[in-house]
Image (cartoon, rainbow, N blue to C red; front, top):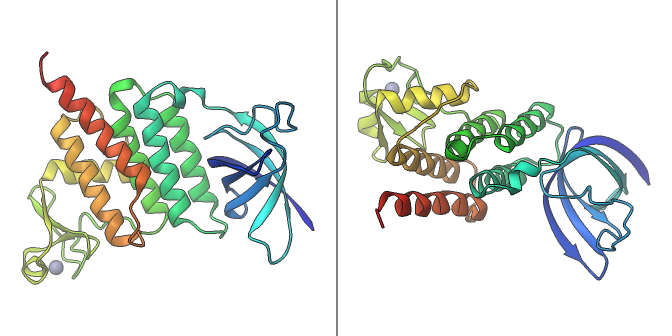
Length: 260
Ligand SMILES: [Zn+2]
């Protein structure tokens, strides 16, 4: 058995047998791992209240060769991120980001992805109530970028010809970005992307904040991201947390849009 100490963040927790929990964590050293927290459901557990969703800290993991499920021997919490549980938009946004990390990153060491994920949860933890969708969208695109799938926005994704920023462009999920008019004729499935929407995507990928999007544009960006993920990353399975995030915000917006 080998002991490993690593920075980690809790992305998913479920009960296991009478007294334990299985926790899925993203780590700085060994990617995403499933670990068994023995006795974590007991009132006096060695983990205390540290093992909460989205908390980060230092995990000590005992690994055994050939085993998928390792043992979490301790978890020293450094940031609990209580703010994520206080607002539905923050919570569903964080859940959607956690799902991206769980579904698409493996056990490989990827410190930049880990740092992006942690910074994303920090940003959402303190994001104002009305801006959680924009913050989540920005974080999700940066995670996509760290995963190596950032869309091409200023050059044609197919032939690399420059696509002027001032013009509406056609965006192809399959090609992985905007297309020049010539390539767009050969690629039947695409979406029109107005210059402002393309600029927003570029801002998010550069880590710059975007605020105050009208409801319709938020919806369009959530849909664009969902379609992009489905094309490039998903294995055919539904992204359930992403679905809740997208759907719930939509319902909230439609209820505020209709005067009582
Ligand atoms: Zn082209």
